[in-house]
Image (cartoon, rainbow, N blue to C red; front, top):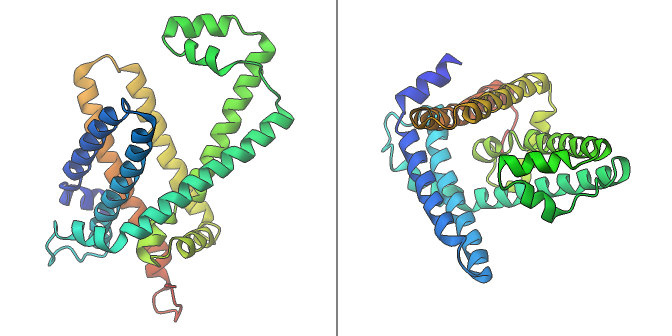
Length: 269
């Protein structure tokens, strides 16, 4: 774990790169949502391409940092190199990840309808309730105990399937960068790695990351009105995202790549 923090602090330039992309994408989304429907669709597609390009370049830097190839390499040159090499694989992987999440939500819907039932709350009423804290309190007060139970069960069900989706794609991107650029083969490899003898170790890392996100979310909700705290928590968020990204790549390389070297096993497809 200390190695991960050391690499993050040594290559702290990764955080400003991530911050610049976040600012740019935020401005892009803000400008795009006010357009017409077709323009909005085009903006979503363009945003997906932008995200794929950034992810390919940024993670290629992290990959080379993990492999310790960045010492004698043009550090910033790794970004465009990664875009050229991994843009299409990352784009394919992102499409597959979206499909996996949608498929899991579909199964969650089927299970919820058959075992929980309809809480009989219209989307319009729920949308109006989310306008403010006061309207939300009034909305909850108007619900029957049975409706509240069903809504809570639906929440747990959807959160459970979302968590399952995250777990099933946890090792996907590292597999794409360390084993094969084929997004379909990379996913198969990542699933094999996930359910290997290292399953509980991988699950522990996954749960630790989930716990970190929960703590940050709760802290943000509690101290959200403090502008100084918001600035600090924003920086911490970007730092943690970088630490987690480096950590997952480092873990994957040590656990599933280096551990197989010398065993006469072809780890690439």
